[in-house]
Picture 1 (tube, rainbow, N blue to C red):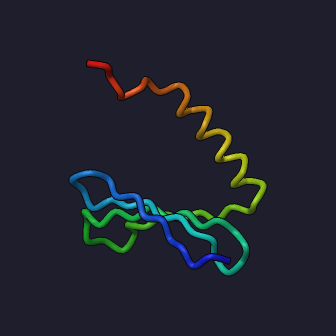
Picture 2: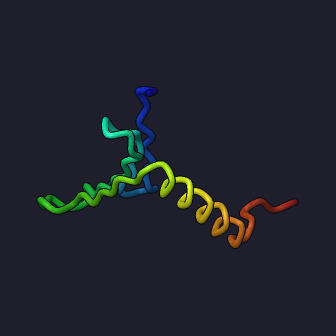
Length: 73
């Protein structure tokens, strides 16, 4: 298993989405909100392989619905 953690940072805030494989052979996704100093600023979910694949397929489908941000000109 690779020792990699991806962190996606929202612009101009302290919100992060972290994603990595955990020791239980699952994909671990965590959303961290450091904008507030409280004990409940982390939400997380662990997905088995099949569920993670299904999530990826759904994300690709939803991304296809988004308008392109690239403009010619």
